Image 1 (tube, rainbow, N blue to C red):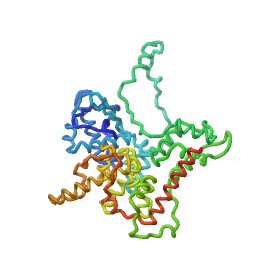
Image 2 (cartoon, rainbow, N blue to C red; image 1 turned 90 degrees about the horizontal axis):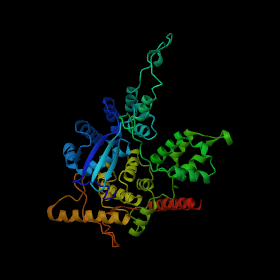
Image 3 (cartoon, helix red, strand yellow; image 1 turned 180 degrees about the vertical axis):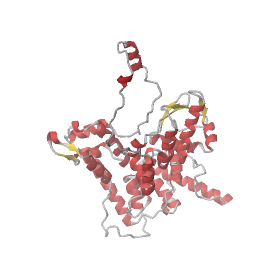
Length: 446
């Protein structure tokens, strides 16, 4: 996130309701959305909703008002806001000259649309315990009645009411007049998927464009966001998910979904190759090269003894990329740092707090991130020597420390050298980097 987009304490904001909201929406927010985005993000939504209803339309507020209302820091508001944006409940616009943000609040999806949504429904099912999931889902089910031996005798509209269809002006006014009226609408979840790039890849694969329907485009957007797939990868998966030939060719949606899920899986390493040699560390130059050469999913998997990351950690990686907008190499350094400091754990709020500081500081490369963390460690060490203050970075403390010097300079690697990368881990990182380069070269050749 650039400094231009980052909220400042002196900035103002306006809230607009883009949908009619009611009690059923509050229930959906708490029961369905809260497990996904957290109670803090839902609290922000409810606060913005209350302000929009209570005050005059287009009333402007200072962010100090919102932080006092929610009893939190400005950086927290940023994190909660990003979560609402990512989940389709909020859109944000900025007047750069006046430094005024305009927030558009959208209604939650209906329970039916939520549970059948490729992203939200899948995420919810994976997060919630099975019994809780079934209980909550059943609570939204509509009872069906037995209509055997009954005949529908309901009157039609024209049986009761009459409209003068010769009154053309009234009909035209009704058709034109509803553009800006309140509606029950939900915002689409933003995706980085580009249909134009996908169609180019489709043409290269000689796949008929007639197969691509509007509903399939929505599925493509969902798979791109859910599994971090680019247009070329989606096209490759599609080419193996088509059944039949010629005019009888159809896309097997289930096959496509399944292959999207398994596409990024890392092949299991040979047992002999993964034999561990502890206490053998590689140089920092090599480590920087490896941190740059692999994707965060692969790096975390390798750091966890080739075990697939948990769903919670996968969601964390996605949020670091989508919400915090960090580059892959910076995410890898952040993972490395937190795993050291938190004894192999990745606490979500702790990681996202640091990610916000990295983003605000404009950190873009692995070297800059290493220098940033070294500055934190050095300051904490100096503070400890003088006042016995703990060296650890806590969530309640601001992490914006000494500015990062971005020109070439020796990197203080005290903290990162604590991370053991043995020969087996180095081998796996190198393999992952080679796979990435091979795929990249392959795409260029195509």
